[in-house]
Image 1: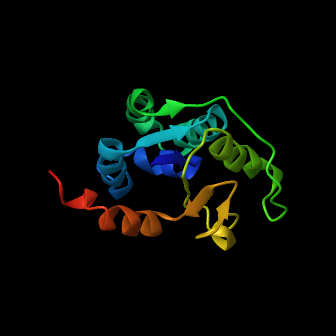
Image 2: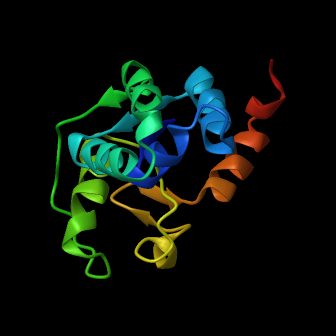
Image 3: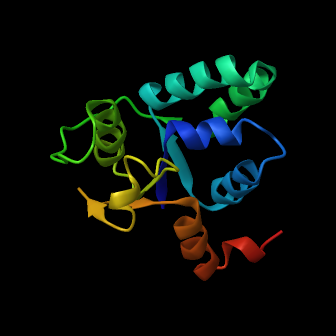
Length: 138
């Protein structure tokens, strides 16, 4: 699996004791986590603004994540322009999943596959990896 991380996932994972970080750690043991500079910079700006004490923790995540500079135009009229680099980056990077907590923009697309990328919430992704047995290893 190649899982593209949206900015809100990176933001949440910046807190080392968060459930998002714990879940990401499980994913990192079994799959490739991917993002792009667009998502990273959005997460970094938000951490700097709302949780500046977590900047170092966010930066510690960077080496564990594959960064892609690939992009493709994706026809998805329900998404605002600011989210197109996310789905376009995930598709061009050959990711199997886009993990996002953005219910407002991506929520209507949860469970749908666009350009071979399945858009999922954390709960949906947890269900998939649980079926693979990833949550039971130590």
